[in-house]
Each structure stands twice: as structure tokens, then as C-alpha cells.
Image (cartoon, rainbow over all chains, first blue to last red):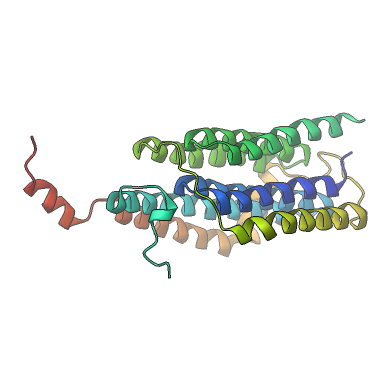
Length: 100
Length: 177
């Protein structure tokens, strides 16, 4: 028997790691992977709450999150390839055309 | 300690170690492999929660398909070790204490006030049959909309990742030694 709060703490930790990676990483692909880590953390809390409240809808939502993540990964990686083709770098510091 | 708790702690330790390793590694391929470890361990956690279908989809779609896409891109672009740059001073000064404070606060609230009873694994029917019935009755419209989303994503990926015609023309005009 594992309390719900343990799952929530683990989920929060994964999300926090994702946010930290998003902020401190300089490689555009690693930043993208940090976003996936955040989505995984959210998925864990969805499943934990689904088990806790005996509501299967939570698991359906995980399914939808996965679909959106797959679509996002396909488009995002295509954008990364396009960026690399024009800039020839993966360093986020050098992709600063929109920066003030 | 029950078997459940032991398994939860074992999978959770893999998750935590993988997440920290993702942050610590400088080469993207190492980060990608540790992310795969995190996702596989999360599938174990889903099994503990009785979500068999979600666990299977996690392994097949997330750890399988999506991460293969990542690894392919890393190898295609020949991504090397990232250069570390110093973040802003304000971020270090306020970010780290703020993060610690926030996480302690959230952890305290969650651990202290969630006051929950644990559920036994398998108490919730998370098998494909039940999920499918729910998905194709109650959630039929969102399901159909996701198919449109996937179609748009496929077309977007194809449009973005193919070379633009101007660069194609430039490529043929250039002399190839």
C-alpha cells in the first residue's frame, strides 16, 4: 500500500527536474527532452489520481497527453532540423533573432 | 514494508536517478538514454497503480516511438557536447533558494494534508477492454479530434523537415567536388 502523496511527490520532482532542465540546458534537443520529462511527471499524477478516486477518465487523459506529446515531438523535431539547417547550431544562445 | 512500497521505491529511485542524470549529462544522447530509463520506470509505477494499458502504451509509444525519434534526430544532426554558459546572476541568486523553498512547501502540503488511503493495485480496472469502452463511448469526440491533430502534425513535420525549394535549387547550382 503506497499513499497517494508519495506518487504526487515523485510526480512533482519529475516536473521540477523538467523545469530545471528547460531553464539551465543550452542544447535545443535536451530542452525538448525536458519538456517530455514534465509531461511524464504530469502523467504520473493523472494515473495516481485516477487510481485514488477510482475514475478511469484519468487514464484516458494520459492517453490524450501521450497523443499530444507524440504530435509535439514530431513537429518540434522537424522545427529543430529546420533550425539546424539554417543556423547550423543547436545552441539556444545562438538562436536569438526574436530576443530583445 | 509491503511489497508495493518496496517496488514503488525501487522504480521511484530509477526515476529520480534518471531525471537527475538527464540534467547532469552534457551530451544529448546520454540525456536521451536516461530519459528512456525514466519512462520505463514510470511504466512500472503505472503497473503498480493498476493501469496496465497505460503502462503498455508508455513503453511502446513513449519509451519506444517518441524516444527513437529523439535519438534519430540527435544522430542525424550529429549533436555534440553542449557548451555551458553562465546563467544570469539573478536566476542563481533567487532561483535556487526559491526552488528549495517552493519544493519544501509543496512537499509539506502534499505529505501533510492530502490524507489519503492507498488503493490496492488492480482495484481499478485499467485493462484495455474497459479503457476502450470508455474511449469509444464517452470520449469519442476528443478521440476523433486527436486523429485530426495527428494528421496536422504529420503534414507539419513533412513540410518543416523537407528542404525548401530555394535551397534545393541552390544545392544543385553549387558545384559538387
